[in-house]
Length: 188
Image (cartoon, rainbow, N blue to C red; front, side, top):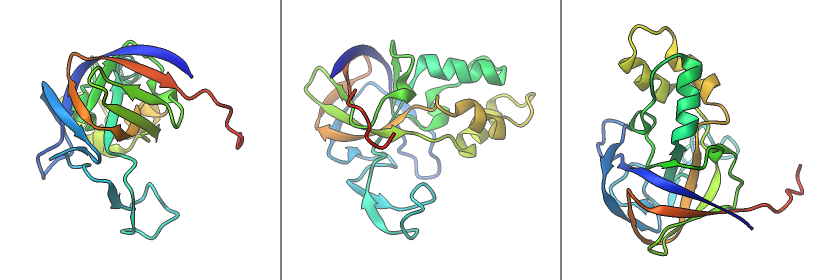
């Protein structure tokens, strides 16, 4: 596996039941299932529109325990939308990293390792949708159709979803090691 490094510059939790919007915290314990209290916490989840191969509501493995975005990709999206910035909170992200600008291209099975020994496994790209776009629109009322424009601008830049592979404490200032799964995909 190839190695890379990045810095955590924000750690966030979605712990308010009425919204997916996250808020910043300084540290947390990663558990099997994610961050306790976060709206996506759990080893399993219910199938929704992202898993059309299963009837809606079917219990499946939760691949979306942790959502990660990169500062560099968020700025690319903001630039395309002609706005100043996009905050990770508006996308419901749990981690904002800096120093790994192609985060969304991270391959399935890649790992993100923390100084505490905690580890995440990449479960794939986080596909953009209009809900975060609606949140972005709230902050830029003078710009038209940001919700729908975000879907296109966020494609291949929206970050990744991960599952906890090894529990441990993580901090907003952690330097992380990224182990890239560079094995050839036989399906391509």
